[in-house]
Every structure is written in C-alpha cells, then in structure tokens.
Length: 250
Image (cartoon, rainbow, N blue to C red; front, side, top):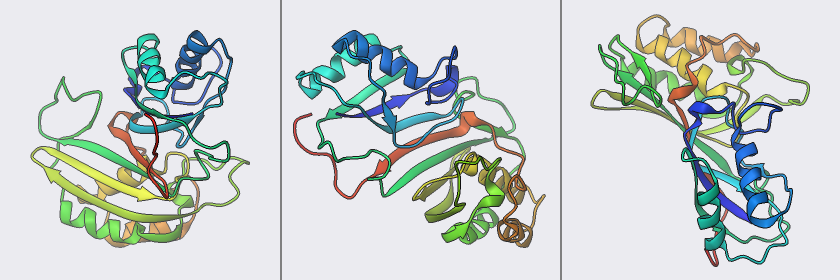
C-alpha cells in the first residue's frame, strides 16, 4: 500500500522513527496499528529532517488488511494528529520500492523577504530582511544543474553514504511578492543539502558571496564547507516523481 502524505513538521523530529521523540513515522505506524492491528514499519521516499514540512511525501507499507484504499485514507485521518494527513492511498505490486523506484524528489524553500516578520508565515518560511538579488541567485543556481559531487553542501557524511554525487534537474529562484521561492529537483539529496544550498544562495542574494565564490564552494567537494544552514521551517517536500503515476482504486 502506498500513501501520499502531507504534514506540518513543526512539532516533529523529522519523519524517521526516533526513540522517545515525536516523529511522522511514529504517528503513522501508531495509526496503522489502530486500524489493522498490525505492527508494520513504513518506508518513506525522502527522509525529512526536524521541522521540515511535506505536501507530497510518499510512504509505503505491507499489510494483510483488505480494506479499500479510500477507507485507509479516512481511517488514518481519523487517528492521525491534525498536523498530519493522508491525501490518497493506492495498492501497488510487492516489487514496488518507494525509494528505489523514484526518479526524483522536488523541494521548495520559502523565504519571506520583508522588513517585517509574519506571525502567519513564521512556521513555513525563513525571514530575510535585506533585499535579495534574484538574478544573481539564479546565476549561481546554474552551477548546481547537472551531475556533480555535492559534498560541500552536506552538513555531515555518515558511514552509510558512500557516494556524494547527485544529479540536479532543476534549480531556480522566483519572487512572488514578498515571498521568494527556491525550487530544486534532483534524483536524491545528501543530509541538509537543500538547506545548505539555500544558505549559500541567500549570501549570494545579499551580496555577501560572489557567484565565483559559490562555484568554488561546489568545486571544493569538502563536507561541511557550505553554510550557514538555512532554518528547517522554510523547507517543504513538494512531490516524489515516479516513472508512471499511481493508478487503480484510490
């Protein structure tokens, strides 16, 4: 079974299960147990960190339950907290792997570029008071597109990460009124990669880093070199892209 999930990550220590800490995975598995009586591990397509949000997270799990997908949606939303919701459910073949089957992941980072803070937007954007040079930020973004070693934009490289090369399909910055949005699509991401990228791009936009310095940062391939890391609250997983859309009963 596959779920398309949306959540406000403000209260949670990321998606992945952590002992004695609130996570999206913990709440999802608890709700599934209440519905099916099965203790199942769920797998996510893209691991979101503490405070990061999602509009289109994709989650999979195995179940013996014969409940229709729409019943799963209704029942899960009844048991889940108000800041987590299931938007759709689909039955898939056992061979489907929610991570390995994905072609790409898409994230947005939201910047409130305003002299004044916004109580309404405070949990979903990063406040930058200085005027951002969008053209310079987009010039820097061009260096990110393609297949590169992005080690400099990873906060840390654990032993489980053997390869720091990723392929970026799109990286661009757009302004919508006082909201600046960084959109990036890649096959996958390193830990804190997007937040470190936007942290460096903000410096470019504020005139604190040149485009050449940004390029040198990428070329250095040194873990932890980029920064400062932008706050998690501005980051949102928008969607996971697969070779074919999910079909069948929903």
